[in-house]
Amino acid sequence: MKKLFVFLLLPALGMTAPLMAAEKKAPMTAASKGVTTLGWPQLVPDNERAKLVTPGNVDHSKGQERPRGNPLSSDDVFNALDGGRESPVYYPVKTWHNKKIKIPGYIVPVDYNSKGAITSFFLVPYFGACIHVPPPPPNQIIYVRYPTSFSMQALYEPFWITGTLKVETMQSELAESLYTLQGTAIDAYTRP
Image (cartoon, rainbow, N blue to C red; front, top):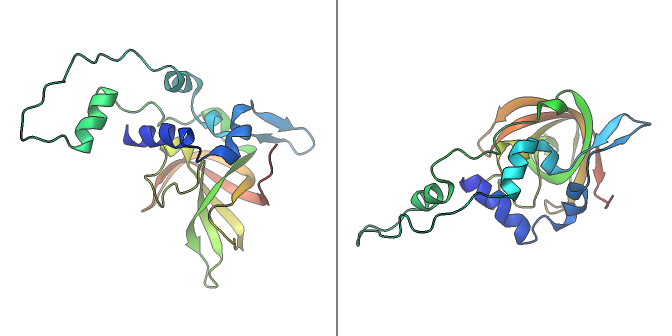
């Protein structure tokens, strides 16, 4: 639930503003290249996405009394918020497996070559994910392998990443991803 809370809170604070235009649109296919342009919501199963938009009823009458001298931990707060259930956004959309996609996002470097150029990275929907704040849910992170190393000027710049998406888990010290992508192109972000 902590990850879901951050995932829902950060867009409200405007931290994903540059990428929202792409996220609001349905997937588009570029016929000439056979590449589908995705937004981050398309990586969450439809039935789970609806639950994020329309939360259930909240009963504020329960759990209001707390013994004195026993402060709430952050885990207590998050468990109370989500009723102790597992967050629904931890499932991939298997339809995208082995599909050529293009998606906007921010790069979080994972591996470098001997010259300091990036060889693999996490692609995330908002700036600071995995670095300054907890990582997004695993289906909102894409681990990208890029065959040609590259350098970038600043972490706060968004990019369009193109490649073949796979539904497979990748874990590192920074985060866990339910998707990997064999990158074929990295382009500066421009609004669609």
